[in-house]
Length: 171
Image 1 (cartoon, helix red, strand yellow):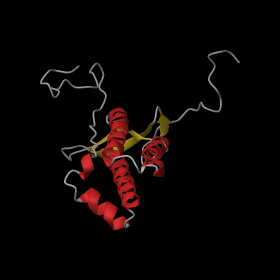
Image 2 (cartoon, one colour; image 1 turned 90 degrees about the horizontal axis):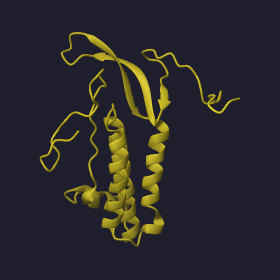
Image 3 (cartoon, helix red, strand yellow; image 1 turned 30 degrees about the vertical axis):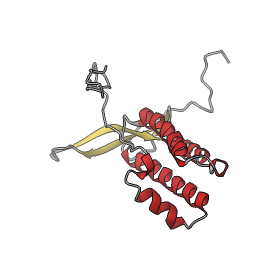
């Protein structure tokens, strides 16, 4: 076996088909999907991608680690800041694809873990933690997760030019 030979256990050929199994690659799950076009006139087939189950589990594990019982004495703002730091990076990687549903699941999980921190910290009921998160106005500063579906096109960049916060054009 040479230095650049693929490992048989990690290498397989997948024939992508609509309603087929799909493949996990670089943290994304890729699957061939058929859906109605935006105009509703015809169906289109495209390669959809979203965070793989392993990536979702990694995100939940990291949020659990940041909201661990050992951190109950830290100010809640610090815990939220650490959650936001992870979520920004995680969402930045997975935002190009069909990830909105998965982003909702991870954000809901982060809110639940934050409510558990508040409940344990104040030795109160589960409802207390949820009410503090829900009625704090901005959910204690927890960031929202948004994704953009941008399909790759031949000879076109994936990132579209758009103004950033400073008004400059990004590339």
